Length: 437
Ligand code: NAP
Ligand code: HSE
Image (cartoon, rainbow, N blue to C red; front, side):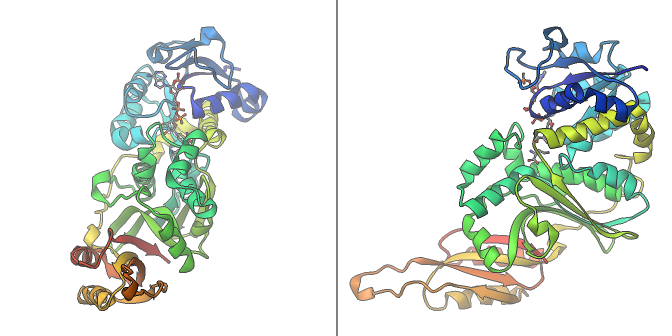
C-alpha cells in the first residue's frame, strides 16, 4: 500500500492538533483512508519552541520551500495563516504537483481565484474544510449534501472568538479585554485578534460560503462589516430583557434577485437555534429550496475541532475523493453573478440605545426624528432614574433609552442617525443594531 506522504507547514494550534491525530491515531487514519498516512516533514518558524507534539529533529525545518519541493511529499498542508508567505507556498506546492489542504480563509478570500485556477491548470486539488467554522463540516454539506438545492438564505455565527467573548461578557460579567485574552490563550483567536473582533474573519468566511451557496463572488468592500469590538454589556442585558441574544451574525440571502449581505452584531430572538449558540461554538443556518431549513453546529475554533476538519480533508485526498469533488465544486468560477443589494435598501428591524438627558421633550425630539424618517416604534424601555433634588444641587444624570423599531430601510435609519446625533440631549454615541426575528 502506497502511503500518503504529508509535508506540513506550521505546527501551531491547528498544526499540532492535526499532527497529533496523524501520529497517535495512525491505525484509525489508515483504516479510514485505505492506506497509511505519514507525516514526513514539518516546517516551523522556531524549531527550538517547546511543542505539545514530538517531531523527530530530522523531520523539522525552517524552510517551507524544502518541504514543498521534496519529491517524497504528496500533499502539502498549509497551517501558518495570513497571506504571505502562505500564498507563495501554496502556489509553489501546486506547481510542484502536490495537492494542498489549508485552513486559511484569509488567503482563500483574497487569492482564491488565482490559487484555484492554478490548481485546476495543474490537475491538483485544494481542500479547505477547516477554513470555515472550524470543526463543523459545512464545506462538505454545501458542496455535496446540499448539491440538489438552491440556497435561499444563509445566517451564520462563524467567528468562535467573538461568540466566546459575547458569552463570557453576558454570562460571567467578564470585562471585554479579559475575555479577548482568554480567547487568545485557548487558541481560538487569529494571530491578529483584531481580525476576529472587527468582523473581518467572519466576513472572509461569509464570502467563501456565499461562493459555494450562491455561486457568486463578493468582495469584502461591497457589504457592511461591523465587529463586536464596541459592544457594551448594557446592550447584551437590554437585549436579554427584550427576549433576544446578541450575536455576531453573518448573513447572505436572496431578496428580489439581489444578495443581501452583512456581518454585524445582531439581536436574535431567543427561541431560535442561532440564539442558543454559546462559547466558541458556531452555527450555520441554511435554507434550501428543496430541503427547507437546516442547521449545522459544533466547535468553530480551537485545536482539536479544527484538526478534525484538516484530517478529514487529508483522508479525502488519500482516498482520492477530494480530487474528484474539487473540479466539480466550481468554486471561484462565476456563471451567473448575483448583484449585492445596496446597503441603503436593506429592510430590517433595529435596536437603538440612546444615553440622554432626563428632561422634558427629549423623548419627543427622538420620536419626531424617527417618525419623520418613516421609522415606527415597536417598543420602548426607559427605567426610572432617582428623583432629583434640585434644591440640594443635584445634577441630572444621563439615562439609557432603548427603542425597538418596526421594519425600516437602512437608508432611512442612516438618515435618522445623522439627525439624532445632532441632538444636544445625546450624552454618548447612539448604539444601533439590526434585529433578526
Ligand atoms: P498559530 O498557532 O499561530 O500557528 C502558526 C504556525 O505557523 C506556527 O507553528 C509557526 O511556527 C508557523 N509559521 C509561521 N510563519 C512561518 C514561516 N514563515 N515558516 C514556517 N512556519 C511558520 O496559528 P493557528 O491558530 O494554528 O492557525 C493556523 C491556520 O488555521 C490559520 O490560517 C487560521 O486562520 C486557521 N484556523 C485556525 C483556527 C483556530 O482555532 N486556531 C480555526 C480554524 C482555522 P512557530 O510555531 O515556530 O512560531
Ligand atoms: N479565529 C477563528 C475564530 C478561528 O475565532 O472563529 C476559526 O476560523
